[in-house]
Length: 557
Image (spheres, rainbow, N blue to C red):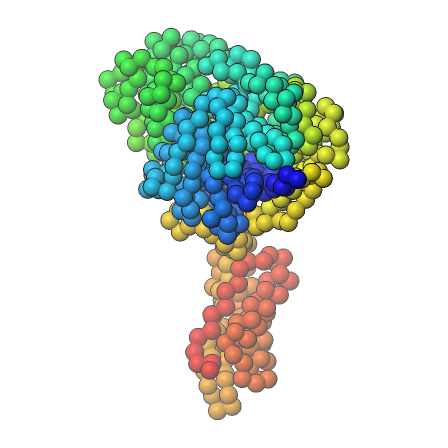
């Protein structure tokens, strides 16, 4: 009897980012992606959010490697952090591996990684894992859907995909190959991208965006064009460069990741820009501004990105001028809307014309919409289905599509991060949960605890109150020396603030004197009474909850 297999979800379910799942076959583990998530506005001071590696760390000796479905950061951006924990085989297309290798090199971890390059429709064996790779179209070239041939049948993971019938490079999603697999081996379990499941119809072809960009460039002859897009979107970069060259402009790239990815794609023959039409940003001084196109990072409003620095006048290579046209060839990722809006506002304040997806056709999604998902399900016809990659509402909608297209409702499961599913001869059932907390990374500090973020939120929203009390030993035991001192920031100011601080001092004095009269308390007891007395007073008088920090000075023990 074939042994059961297990699928464990470590990220990407109920959120956009942190995509990471594990498949267990014959007591070995292979990961499907290992991505990061960018922080939202409530994650103060956080740079990145990683999957929780606790379960992987505990099972490091069983981890065979990771399948990198494509080169986006939300799928491969956390690889270098996992490589700090364990060596890994990384399996993917040449471009995906090249993009991952750049990040891994930055963290000096190449010695931990073994790269296994695979081509379209190739089938390989890695440990007990029989893997087959099908080309799919997306907003980064050379992505894969992956079929894992297991003792319990085929587990098919879509990766991120759309059904683009006119892709820029002509590389189509291999529906024929997926159909052949479904008819012959059958798909026991299907895991599929849900990001655009709520959107009706079909995603616009990437090629159509190129025509729109060309028209915008042609209508602005004699003006400098600055275009921001994802550095990984090589097809978009190609179309921007084509429009620039066709309208007599020279192309310069700006931003570390843009420079690296353009160099990698040109080296691999995936990006074609004439040598005489591509300059380093440092070498554009002699080029008339109207003959220049700058392709930049920062389309998501990242605070330290090249475009954000232009918006604040802090970019050392480029100063925005009134004749400039800035084109944001992207759509804000959920949670980034405020940052993008702020950058747009800053650019317009500096006199630039700003064109974005809200007012012009300058972006097409890389994710399948409802019509495409219906086509996909009609071809794959899985026995079991789990929607992945999306917020809960996206996965719920995708589950409904699967049922509509013929998958038994009892065989459709919506999972969350930390869930595991057991696939056996008896069917698909839920297993034990594993740790799946958000791991917050901040600069060189490393991982932050959830309590640190809560403290930062309180400080930012409610303010800070420090209460200093001095204790000394007297003839009758411990005594309060003088009045407590109350110092606040971001709570209340002015004459009203001084009056409230005076009342707070009285409340603390009364509470501490009562505590000392009852015996000889320890320092932690005094701190607790001070915090409680001030907290109650502040909440009663102002309905605020600032952070209260008691400081006990003097001899208590």
